Amino acid sequence: MGDLIIENLSKEFKKGSNEFLALKDINLSVKNGEFVTILGPSGCGKTTLLRIIAGLETYSSGTATLDGELITGPGPKRGMVFQEYSLFPWKTVLGNVMFGPLMQNFSKDEAEAKAMTYLNLVGLSEFKNSYPYELSGGMKQRVAIARALANEPEIILMDEPFGALDAQTRNNLQNELLRIWQEEKRTIIFVTHSVDEAVFLSDRIVILSKRPGTIKKIIEVSIPRPRDRTRPEENAIRNEVLRLLDTNENCEID
Amino acid sequence: MNSFIIGMESQNVQKIVIGALSLAAFAILWELLAIIVNNSFYLPRFSSVLSAFFSVIQSSFFFNDVAISLYHFIIGFAFALIIGIPIGMLMGWFPVLDKALNPIVEIFRPIPPLAWIPFAIIWLKLTHQAAGFIIFMGMVFPIIINTYSGFKNIPKIYVEAAKVLGSVSSIKLIKNVAIPAASPMILSGIKTAMGVGWMCLAASEMFGVSDSGIGYKIWFYYGIQAMDYVVVYMLILGFIGLLLDFLFRYFIQNRVLKWQKGTVV
Ligand SMILES: Nc1ncnc2c1ncn2[C@@H]1O[C@H](COP(=O)(O)OP(=O)(O)OP(=O)(O)O)[C@@H](O)[C@H]1O
Ligand SMILES: [Mg+2]
Image (cartoon, rainbow over all chains, first blue to last red; front, side):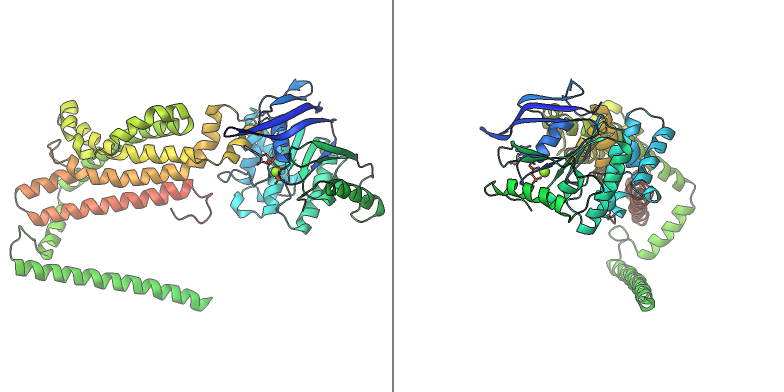
């Protein structure tokens, strides 16, 4: 359950008559319960890779399978937290989080119970009747995480979920996410721009190169949790990642 | 804070006072002008319109006139909703249907609704349905067009978010995402349509579909040269139109769209 295998995957976009290679020869396998981050310069195909896994984008060659099943379209086994705000503005917080379970044909009561469980987990149960416009950016992303979790997917794909947040909120949410991940034991694939974030969160860091996106290196982070943000162990990995990113000409990491 | 509230209040008071004074001045000017013109067919006096007004609202047929007009309006409105919303949705959601139906809609849309009067009479005879048909013709296109463009402009992110959560089929996506996301546009189309439909009402009752109704009465009193009564029914027509607009905004639009932050609808 929750084993993702990507083999020789490439993705071409057609722009008019031109073809444009966004991802090339991606090989990656992610085991159940693993926390993997994907790091790379802007435009290297991180979102594209996540969207392919989510089933929102087709791929040109290679295969992507979850538990041996070829990924051909979106499905509730793979949850996603998008790079931009994606809560349904016409639904309350509770309505948003209940949406997935209702689509899985759970009864209203069951869906609400599930939703409340995950709203509690992200600490927002008292905002259940608020509309998204009444929430801060950080709260919106927490609801988005609760919404993805409430569907009880095997893999959660997260595309720079904390990208738009201030450093303080970001640190808090990173801690919260780790806590949730440890409680829920789900596979997480997490895209980020931040080396610190990757080192703090993940079991493995996948470093993508600039166009066309290829896997440059996969780094194991075997530092036990809870991690620190400034100790020599963390710093050593951080430096290694930075060095790998640096050798990328015109690298746009921020 | 206190002085702010007082400021707001005195502004409101000012607005009411100036508005009332302006209306009073308008009435006096009207009266004077009518005295000068001295021809109640060209310009009835304000005072005689006022007394006509009181005799109309006390009369037994007034309620009937309003009811018949609303009946015509509701026939047109109901059919415009039942036909316009699905067509707009289908065109907005399925590109093939967009391509297929767009030319047809574009041919019929610019035709003024009143140009349909001959066919209304031929197809439906002199019935309430014929009046409803003219109103329908005025209402259906704003509803189609707004529903269509509401559906065309649904942010892709909501559709994708719904798909990832397991709402994949077109029917589910239309129900769960497209309709709520497009509801502000659809409702504003309905509001526009109500305005257009109400404007068609007077003319739709002037070709003999019934012997009551606000539009019919305007025509009837013109026929007997009672222009003060004509003005009364004109004003009633305008007032009910305003009232419908207000009721729609406060009881439908604002309730359905309470998730929209501070939107002025
Ligand atoms: N639908 C599309 N059609 C054409 N080209 C696309 C499409 N989506 C993405 N691309 C291109 O593919 C490349 C990778 O885009 P992608 O969004 O995956 O980058 P990213 O790594 O997520 O960048 P960022 O860090 O800025 O979010 C970019 O050059 C982009 O222009
Ligand atoms: Mg991206």
